[in-house]
Image (tube, rainbow, N blue to C red; front, top):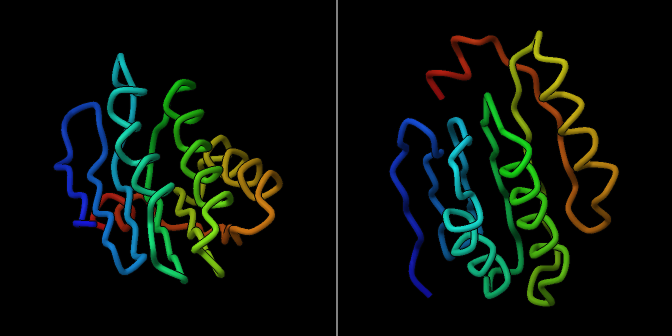
Length: 128
């Protein structure tokens, strides 16, 4: 399995998925066909061989369809029998209640993946 790297575009986030279990999604996601963008990421998580996973999500905007795809990534990590421990670090702007609530929803829905909610200033989130 090779690393999966996607550059950020105007409507899709940067992705760095490494076979060692370090996963990063950073940016905005509001593309017209998020299924097409996220399917390789979901497949990657389904097939990941790492026992330990840390996923950093630094997303400042998700449309509804993209948020469903992000949840499918969580589901893939939850189902993957190779993964024994998983943590998702959900970063959001300190005054962005909507993104905080979305992180809380993901946290409530996950059993195996431990979701940590982390507030950041807007400038820190943009520079991350």
